[in-house]
Image (cartoon, rainbow, N blue to C red; front, side):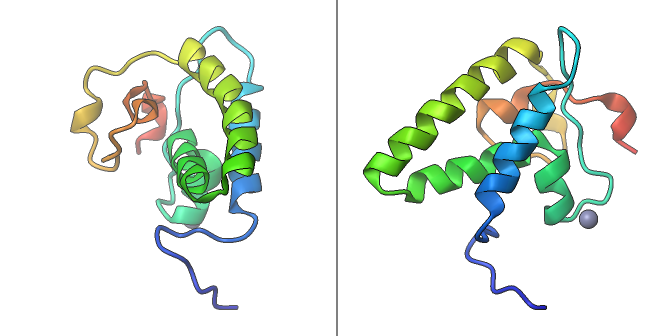
Length: 117
Ligand SMILES: [Zn+2]
């Protein structure tokens, strides 16, 4: 089936997928978490494997929601953001990553190096 994607690949259900990915990521054990880049490289895999991509999508959704719905989602995401920020480490070399061009803070956290290849 061919999906007609809106700009930047927004599909119905993507918000839930991104939120599920976010919660799943934060549910991992350990004091610190490392982001993982998708091995495949396609958007569908990135959305479930790379938390920065999932967070990008949530940001895109937030910008489009009507006021009240945006406030509700923003409050929910703020809690997740706080934990993500607390449990990941800054990556001073983030700007060197070829696959990450995002300017948001979640693109500048450390990735698990073993997932690069
Ligand atoms: Zn893929």
